[in-house]
Image (tube, rainbow, N blue to C red; front, side, top):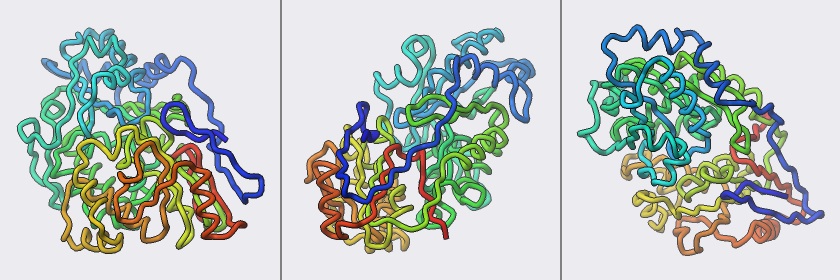
Length: 426
């Protein structure tokens, strides 16, 4: 069977004697002529004025900021940007008044070849493109504190723009509930302090900080509050299938347009299971989602949804970027020789305070429940010493897991990342 892995995928040989279930995404209708359909959505927005009217009502318009996802996200942003630029140009807006701001959050800067993938080579040459830098306070605007005392730092280019547009895609997120919508602002273009306090150990440990939960999710609620304070004029969000083709489009009001796609995802993505599995094989959905080990924790969280206590998760991600550029603290904790429970408790007690602590916190939580084998391009010595196990091939990891759990163990395979998620029926 074919498993999403890197750009080419990975073939896995399954023994007919194994007790295997495979969950595949529901078939979706692919949108034909997506650029034209995006333009149509822009002109027929949800719960707000058309973008053309929003722009015409602005006095002395000098700058429009378009926020786009960074290279770790699989959506075809270049189609959204192409549609937007054609629309803006038709309104009389020149390219020189447009800034494309890449929502890197706390991720590394964009590489030159990645900018071509994000924007398309023609528009990359035409437009002013800026990477957000969450740790550069000179590029941030301080706007006071949110109701929960989180200081609000936001990118100055965005804040000072006359028209503010967010783009992104909506799918379940392992602790934010859903991507898209306000997540393009926080963490997308927020300051490091804002991101870290919103993604605090307490918020990450909330029972509502899970795939598919957003109305009660503390991080989503904070991001919505901050977005209302900062201002968002217009959003364009999409949904994609496992091959990253556009299946749904919504444009207009930040919350209403985002909610429309969330409701679609809630109906499409989750598949009920009646009992947990001994072994779960899962990935992030291939390139660019499986670029590094840091991002691969998301796939382990998918496995966590279906695994029994003491079971085995087999995480299958190419990790062509290694552990993750700039993830020094994550790497350090991977090699800390600490028990997962100690890491988790120290983070909750604030004895460990590092950037991006949420990734190691979630990894530690999963390791407290199940063992994890990792199949990737890296060497075994790059896995650290807190409990992750190495296997060269998926088949090898399955054999090792069957030795532990028995030859009749039930196995679940999730080959397409978060495109389909198991939901344990209680």
